[in-house]
Image 1: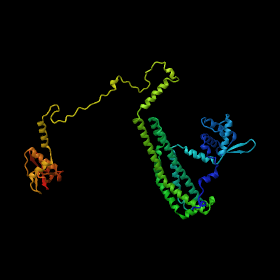
Image 2: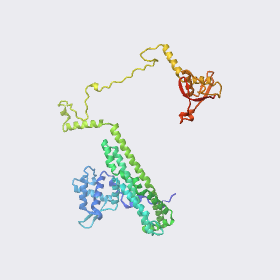
Image 3: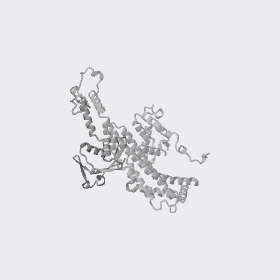
Image 4: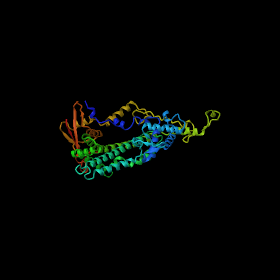
Length: 497
């Protein structure tokens, strides 16, 4: 079994020692916007002093409640009280009970409202969640540039040259700046996600283009990956990571950093050594994940651009303008009969005046009718014209004529068997003599095919070889032969079987 005494304390255990159980309860109530705005105003007005008089506090609370007329207050928050001062006083008590304010009495008539230490980190977290400025990308690059510059200084993490407390201070500062850069990256990703949600709810194509080119496009030139590459920042981050990795494996670095943590925080030897190793490991891991995180954000930006294009195409090409025309027609009717009643319209004569600018008039049903185009029936009979009826003898004669002119393997085999009776025999167009057109068609069939069944049932094979294959780039040296009134390039025929 794992010894529970050796496990580190959980976050909830450490948090319970710092704030009360009611500290986060106002954020879960229906009146949470009032609590958040009250805390924001009180911290801003208190400034560095961190406190306000009770009278000023109640006035600020009363102003904030007046700005939220639709907020639902509970009875313990002064919902049943009609006096604004009494309601503000009741809400002031709720802030004290939650641990956001502390009531301080210095005299009989001197009461102060002190900002508790836990309220400022809570507001800082809420402000980070509400951050929507794309310009955080530029701050992100500046933060990383300063971090790399620190790691590039000679001997900044040398355990021989630096004192333990100086090493502790440098590593802690690097961890905080790197954590801030990572938080900015996550905030930028949240910004892109919010733009995607707004783009999915855009009503018109104009809203889609405005969101893409005006609002989202303001920070488009500062995308994360370009900021990392600009000025060799990506290469500098890789060098900084190699420096951290080298110091992570250095036993002397671990001992000196552990000594600095032990002297500063009062840890024992084991706790300080484990914390030193954890700090160096986290630095190495976070530096390695910056590139992947920035590339992921660039992919989200590219996905937003594709979403905008698809949304614009849907609103302009697929959906059409019919919904907008109907909406404009309804708006025109509402404007014409504003303040009236449906019962008053019954006594009025019918009004057919056009209400929509897009209205088009069609005069008669013939203007809307599109006659169907029918195709004429196809005449599949043989002959010169489909209008002249042919006899069976004419059809048979036309069929025989097409068969006579067709280049078939059978007529090629007959010519090869006639010219070359024996296997492995050869001949060429120079040695043969053809007189009729049918003989010329037989020769063309020989060129078109390579084998065919003979009359006796055996298969005849042959090959054709001409000078064109070897001297294709020199046509002037190719010889020609004349057959049946046509000049033919000379080629040879070899019977294979």
